[in-house]
Image (cartoon, rainbow, N blue to C red; front, top):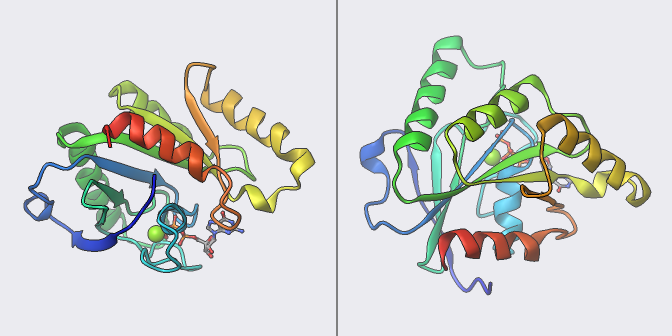
Length: 195
Ligand code: GTP
Ligand code: MG
């Protein structure tokens, strides 16, 4: 997909603020710091449209980015971030749960896991939850560039095994740094959004 236009639309804290134009939405879920915002920037080849940070927990709303007037990327707050209060965490959780179970334009969820480590408890819970609700899902293994090429397959295998990802499921190794996985991910997104 050739991206000719991409713009930040809104940091939504309430469903009334979600766009009403019905364009397909691709949501990005994953732990804080896993590379959600960086993936958006790489997909649209912009350095800093989606705010990235080495301080986890930066993204605390649903951030909408519109691409080519065709679809939205919806950047979620990272889960498993301990430094916000429990009640705040709960509020995020509810907002995301409502979004994931009721949002009609949602066409695909990208669950992002750090390729360097086995999935965390939060990753496993999130994965089970997404499967339970039968959401269209693609798991993305981030920061592939941080693993020597010869060891990548081994890491991929561990993650697939622990999440129970089979040959019929979608899994894409990704690097926002190098662009690995970008074309493959656009192909998947096109298939699910019809764009
Ligand atoms: P929250 O908004 O806090 O949930 O984090 P996030 O998931 O949006 O992570 P973000 O994209 O801000 O990236 C976190 C850190 O990891 C930043 O310092 C990025 O530069 C770095 N990073 C993200 N993706 C990659 C990658 O593919 N390779 C490398 N080497 N670093 C990455
Ligand atoms: Mg972010």
